Structures are given as structure tokens and as C-alpha cells.
Image 1 (cartoon, rainbow, N blue to C red):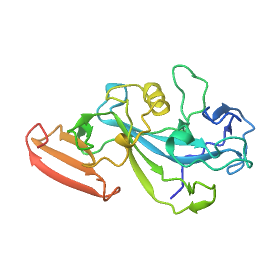
Image 2: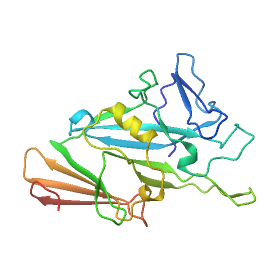
Image 3: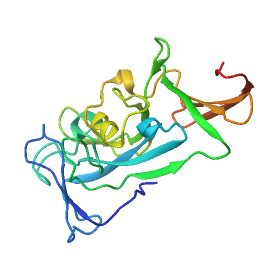
Length: 225
């Protein structure tokens, strides 16, 4: 929907060098929403099991570059690599960065057992995944081809369970932006187990044809099948 957790306490600027990520500066007198020239909201990332708490999750708001170079005088970015995703969250290297991360708790006595993504080579463990814009596209002559909006599903590689918020924020900055992590062929699988029964719940999010589909399977046992 394009809606994110805007905390109104930061400014975002994009360096003229298109190889550099956006800069997020925490301050009281922030730019108004929509006035951070050169930066744009590009997606959300969900982390499960922060700091080894398998009953918790974090949702990151992620910004990126809007242009490949100087704002308003260069083409808009066309992919996640050019956008250089930057979560509105502190990292160990930048503890003063503004924080717009939302935290929550799983209900009904559930706890996460595992998250994997499968691009056709078998399940691979991760700790976070995200939903990002598809961006615009241009022809080889530089003319706009399409600004049609839809959402891509991404595995955040590298990320892993039980990491801190700061660690996962850094993983988003360092994430693999190649096709191998985008819209996994067999989706992203989350396995939840019950603390009060012998049941599990397996949720599969997306596949290469249906990015935002979800499938729920409930079964018996301590391991998702």
C-alpha cells in the first residue's frame, strides 16, 4: 500500500555517487513526509526470532535511492541493487541511526522453529524476508518503459535466526540483490510450533508465479513436514 511507519524524526539524503546508499540522520526537525528528495520508501522486511526470542518478530521499514545519480537530473533506479536498501534502524556500526522498526509478539503460544527459502536448489535457512517494489524500467535509449507497480518477495541473504535487530538491519544493507534471492521458485516457508500442544503450523509465502500467495498447513508433531 506504500504505507510505512514514519516516525517524523529523521532526514534522508542520497549522495550524488549512485554507488552509495541513502544517508539517514536522526534529528528533531525532520523533513516532512514526501520531502526527502532522492530517497523513497521501497519495502518492508520481517525478522523472526530477534535476540533468540522465538515468540517475537520485528518489521523494518526500508528506504532506498530514488535516482541513479544526482536527484532530478538522472534516471530513477530500476532495481533493488541500484536502490541500495537501507532500513530505518540502527546497526552496530551506526547506533545513532533513527529507528522506525515495529516489534510484535506471536499469539496463542506459538513460537517459530525455522524459516527457509527455496529457489529450486532446496531449502536454505534465513532469519528475515521482505516485500519490495518492482521499480520502474527503461529502454536502452533511456525512455520510460513501465512504471507499473507490483511487489516482489525477497529472501534476506545473509540473515539468520536469533540475531539482534542491529544484526538484521546490517543484513538488509548487505543483502544479496541477485535473482537468486528474488521471488524464490518454491517460496519462503515459516514453521511455527505450539508450546501447549503437539501441533505445528507451516506457512508458505509466495512462489515464482504468485509472489504474495500464502498456504497454511497444520499438522501433528514437533517438526514441520
